[in-house]
Image 1 (tube, rainbow, N blue to C red):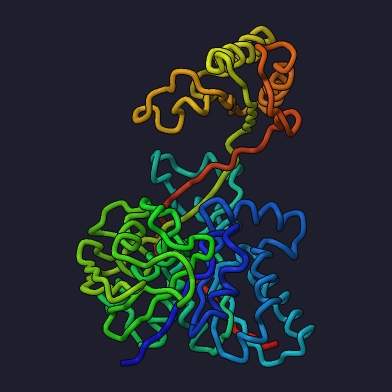
Image 2: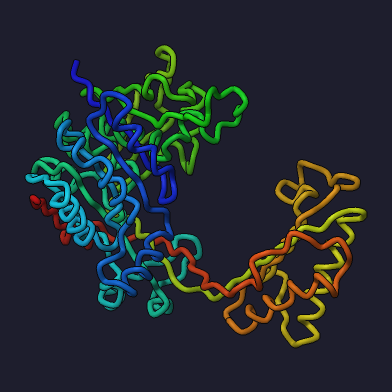
Length: 455
């Protein structure tokens, strides 16, 4: 029975830079998926692109390609990634530059384009698409001028098209994390667009490995049982034509693959388990069957799916004011009382200056007293030290900047025992808020473009 090995070497922009290299060099592998885009990452890329039109993509991906491109070509290991961000064409040109520097020719790189709706927001609103916030119900129209990005979640189909055209590397913008595993499986096994059970299986395979080592022992609740976590191996799916698959990792790596580690990842970002919605299919997580299949091997089977929805999810972001935060360590004796007094000094001095932050626009935490889980852990009687963390948020930048000037004075105008203050005055930073919405599928899919070019 044919087996296709798909690994994930990047769970987010900021994940281990060595993980995808180790995944490539650690053993047999056919495809490597690399996910760089959290919900607000595209707004960061937009700011980069506005400063430099040649940017707007995950530059870490270029460093990875520089390290391994000759090996990818020699072994024909294909890489799928959303590292293209807001500028996949510029990312491709940079890869071609690397290929020429390394003396390589015939490197085929595909680009999936069409997810970026930011330039079309005005047009879509004028055409009657309200793009209501899925959390608040508000229409997007009053916020259009404050938007910083707007991207549709694309599915696996355009990635499959790029693979069919022989792309060694496929660069995407906002595709779903799961598509990076579903696409190679559907491509290799020629799954039909309406083969809902197998598409659901590929989707769940992608969901399991999308966060990298989080399914191989990273972030595991029984962390003390995980062997050799410093050398944790990143996950690999061994997929079969019938939709069953095994989750494993390279031999000799740390971490572990068990029913427990896979179960925890399955619950990650879970809403309705019977209806996990993606652009490709609605997967039913209640049908999943897990079984240990040997050391560091979990077999997954029984998965069922339902037809895809008529809409696609939009991930947008907008400017929502400013924020600032500062912290300092305060030592015993009576560290908690000192921290409470220090916070009171900040808030009252701001009020005296005419700068008032209502409770919902300010935060106050005394770390070391159970601040993370106050309902579970009672406050210790007398901690040897605590960390006071204060923060504010407001539409008015001047107010936020004024807050930043009240932290450092506590060193000499607050209670004794203040230490650990560093970094200067807290700076006002723009708040980038998330705007989830839905849009008719045809408004996006009719404009998707897939191009494959050769270096």
